[in-house]
Image 1 (cartoon, rainbow, N blue to C red):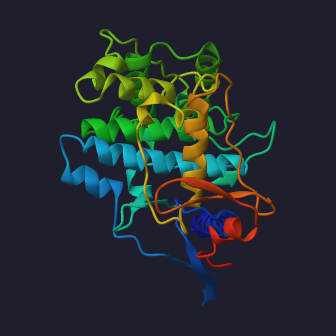
Image 2 (cartoon, rainbow, N blue to C red; image 1 turned 30 degrees about the vertical axis):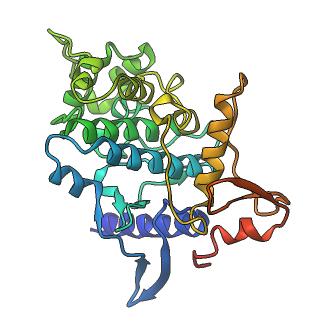
Image 3 (cartoon, rainbow, N blue to C red; image 1 turned 180 degrees about the vertical axis):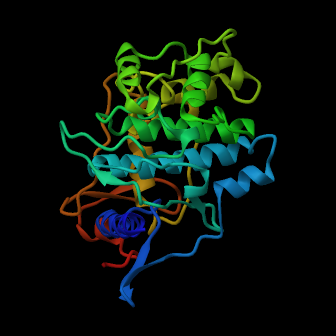
Length: 323
């Protein structure tokens, strides 16, 4: 009981710390933190429903526009977290909130934590269906790619209307993944064999393969299938980053429209993505610092113009409270 209470307290304090540090339009807004009767209470902004509700409404798959709308904003939020050396570790449909205006708010930072080079982390995080292979085998040397894998699973589930790999156990989950993407990496197999949790357990050999491309071909466009493959690479070092995925052709001709005062971040990334299409060099999307002397503003006509003042950047997040 003491261990359970301690976990809940650490979990709650971790959420508060992350949300006080991270401020982004697609991360749920922490309004207030207070203690009452030795309990820590977190007050969040209200959001009408979640992606899980959308999946229940669309059992045969969500509309393609909705899927793209949600995934784009998830990439925005998780990219922001990764740039600030933080991983979420529990991205799943019920943790992706949606406002009445269709704005995504990623929530539940109980498993989130900052990352440092060379540091090891606990392997028991994330919900099984959205857990990357490196987490399932018990690897403690993981990083941001685990969030990308989870986003890929959410994308596939929204596209298909059902979970991509609904494993009944960790071993079953690894079996289903192996059946779609092939044998695990030698490093991951070694970790699996040395993991005390899997002593005496062997990973079954798939009798018939069920390639990921075929699982998605009936539900997604070729661009969508390729997008999923980039997210769900079994090798975390080859998995695309969030910034790379926002440059993927799956988002060609996609335009996210929201109030400029709240979503200047989208205009910045969209402009950078469009600019990269006309350049042969790879463009790295960097966060816009509040001390920058140059910012961009979108006019009513949709054109972007330069504004040499510091106030416009600061106003982007002015609606968020300082805690």
